[in-house]
Image 1 (cartoon, rainbow, N blue to C red):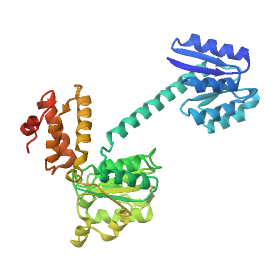
Image 2: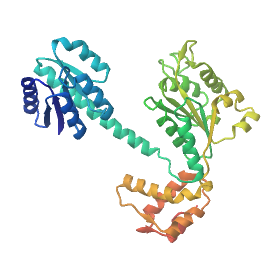
Image 3: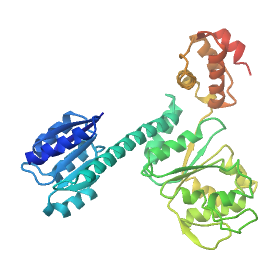
Image 4: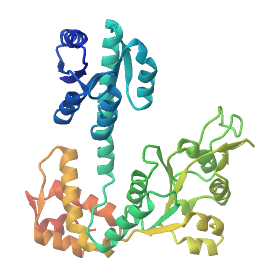
Length: 387
């Protein structure tokens, strides 16, 4: 049921609005307030899905009500009610965040359409917030070890800036989690986060993938196509496994970092891009530079901030938390009851040599949940977690 608040000092208009909304849809629960001050009190003490608010009122006008509400409950959509002389003010309130305005006397169809659209918008905002929480949980960083605490502290310091970050560490350690948190805690969080796995794209296609191409640039280029840098405009591009990028593509990435401009393959037209670059690699790039496989100037452009993600063997104290986290997650995904692990089972897992790092641990936990007993025991670990 949608809860709507009507704030209007003219009793006749207020009664008409309440009557129309109540009779139009039995899922609308309509409350009313006779002035701005009483309206704010109701907004503070209740959860409304929509507010219809007059602009000119005694004690506190509609503009002040809108401003106050945006500070305490910014997600509530406002539809302003404007008299003939209030149209300019009504338009200005939309710049302040009001969803729309209706004029007095209210046109029935316009009123109902505006209310429906505003409620749909509120529902979409709520869904997006829920989705964002799910995304954040997906990339949650689990661990209380000193190494993880240092990474979290580094992220908090670096994320609000536009500094480029190079994340290093073995495969399976969670470098992509660091990249996502850098984006989510940045000023660019509302923009896109575009991921590119440089190791998974053939060298002859990597430039087209990153920078796009124009029709006819090569045999299969049947139409113009934007690349990942353009897609990430206003947000973050995450270049995973950048150590596997071809030297020619490295040169173009370097130019993009230096000039904030790119060119599509087959074109000489510059395209301006506003992109934060976060890169990751499991390779020793300094060794790659010595071998002539990676550009030193690009390395220094990327490695403004270096974040090293430790191997799981270097943070064994986090294994109990990780096992519990994966047990929760797997139970939720499979729709089954969560399994616990005995202390001896946890101790044995902490003693293992985790060459595949967190990715390997997650697979082992899933195997133990499927094949182990009601409580995963030391014997289950010995039987089913062997390499």
